[in-house]
Image (tube, rainbow, N blue to C red; front, top):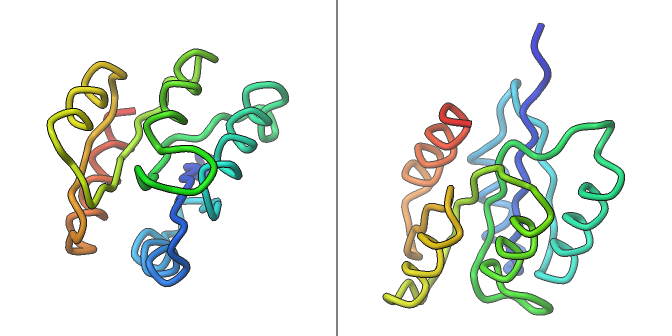
Length: 131
């Protein structure tokens, strides 16, 4: 049996984070939840230094605007440390600057909020299939 895919969900809105976790729950996924940008940065730093049982995440889903650090800052930081997993960025403010920055960082898809949960599930499945 293959290892479960590690999916990190970073969202500072507790209710939305729970909805995302419920929508993404699957037997083949290990979900990791973080509450804000600072916690996501700490997680990325930990896995880049020590690894989670030797495994990096297969996908990170993050909000753009969070306390501590923006989702795009975390993508930039992760890329600088060799973490190449895909990111799905959720943003209530998906303007041209956000889209341009996401393209420059690579392996990053931006979804505007609000977004149907099915669209987020589909984006996650697509990113995991491609990774």
